[in-house]
Each structure stands twice: as C-alpha cells, then as structure tokens.
Length: 261
Image (tube, rainbow, N blue to C red; front, side, top):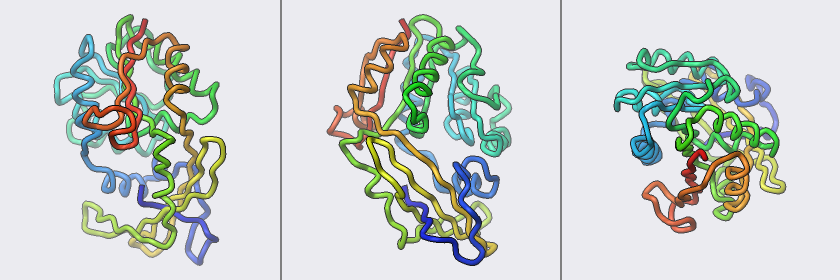
C-alpha cells in the first residue's frame, strides 16, 4: 500500500471520508489505475476453476477487474459491492454486461445459488468486529451449495505489513488513463489489538487534495480458522502466498480455501 496522510489539512485539502477510495468517483479512477492485474488475480482465477461448479460469487467485487475476468473464463458470475461508485465503474468495464451486479452486502446474496464464493483484495479485513465477520461468513455459507468453496485472502499479522504503509512524506505518482498524474501517500494513524487505522491521501491533477480513511482487522491464522469453521465450513487449505507457498514462507498472506459442509 502506497497511500495516505492526515497530519492536518492544508489549504485545498478536503476532510477525510471513510473508504472514499471506493465511494468517491474521482478516487475510484485512481484506485483502478493503481491496482492492475497481479498474481493475486491469477490465484483467485485458478481457485475458482477448481470449484465444484461454475456459479461464482465475488463479494466486495469493487471495480470488477477480477469479476469480469471470471466471466470471460466461462463462469456464471455475480458481483456484490456496497460502494455505488465502484460498482458503476465495474458495470462500465468492457465485458461487464456478462456479470450480474448487485449493489449491496453479503446479506443480499441469494441462498443456495453458488458453487464458489470469493472475497479478494483483503475484503475480509474490513469486517473489524467479530460479530460482523461472523455474520458475513454465515451469509456466505447460506449462499453456497453444500460442498461449495469459499476462498478469501487476509494478511498474516505476524508479517506486520502495515508498517510499510506509514510513509507520509513519500509521494507515489499514479498515472490515470488520460495521462494525468495523481500524487498519493499513506499514513498509519492507529494500531491496537490487531486493528490498524490508516489514511490515504491524493493530490489531484486539478490541484485539490482528497483523503480516505479506513480500518482493517488483522486476524491470526488460528482465529481465522475457528471463525470459518464456526460458520459451517471445513478449512481445506491455508496458503501463505500467491504461489501457494506455506504460511510464513510466501507474501505475508493467509489465503483460505474452505468447503461448505
């Protein structure tokens, strides 16, 4: 993560908005330019192909980069996201017409309708409270058929990846599709008991500055396993990296593959 700061608002800087990177149309454009296809997308695309059937739910689909690729690969895909600006961008993406898009949350997923459910881009970490996380897992269990696969990523807290996000004095240029450049930065603003607060900052080409705040929960592997199993899944694999390395030997990830029982 190479973004954000809040050490006071300078002239022209707007007050920080919670998760504005997903909800503000101008920042969604930056997000898309910043987050292009990578090894994580290859991982989830491959995992989806290993499921028991071709009906795939992408929960927290964002701007639809992977969602559309899943449809291109022949899956019957539904993308759900609560951020309207991100979902608007997903619908406009070439190939987006092949996806069923739902503006909503896990509670809006139809029951017994999917063979595979994915949560990518560390969506799982945005569910900070334990009861909220348990509710999402319960919704996904209802959405999957018996034997269906749940696959998601969450960062291993032992890797302490958030320490690399604290760079309020470093600017990272992001080039938009029309050639304009946005300067981005980041700052961690709080850390307690596995919960990390951070702010993303953007110096826009028009001269104004926008900020986006967020909070993520870093759950240890044993905590993740217990929560998934309590929701009615059997954990079949936990990888540590996008090349399916063992936990602790990959990219600081916990990549969970579980089966609905």
